[in-house]
Length: 175
Image 1 (tube, helix red, strand yellow):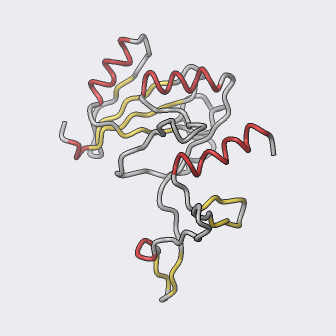
Image 2: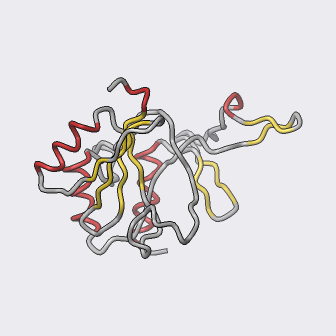
Image 3: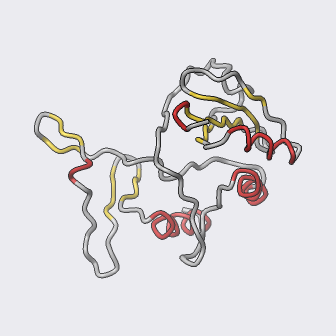
């Protein structure tokens, strides 16, 4: 394992308060400083035929390759307010608000992401799409806004490396 990856993985429990790190198909329980093993909250587990079954609680991170990771992290911080992963406990981690999250594999042939070489697209929930679009356009970032539909209002942009980003203001968010 590379030094940079080790640093990142050792910082994640500090940054996210992680209780479980997954390695392939096995999971490893983390321990509190006093050596006490952290347990999952049984009320949040699924019940299958009377047997408790652990499920994920949410997205703990989104990792992807970049030509210039430092510059791209700065772009996301400046334009979308997403803080980079802290490498110490003194730094603040970006925390997302709870709310709906779509998790949807698409066919390999989809044109929805734009460039067929891009294998992913991230969708960020926002409170005020119009205001964020105005801010992005003021920073000379091209944003395409679509017509609202029953699920909400959407806009599409790309980061400096061409990765597709979708912004979503859910229909119930008040605007």
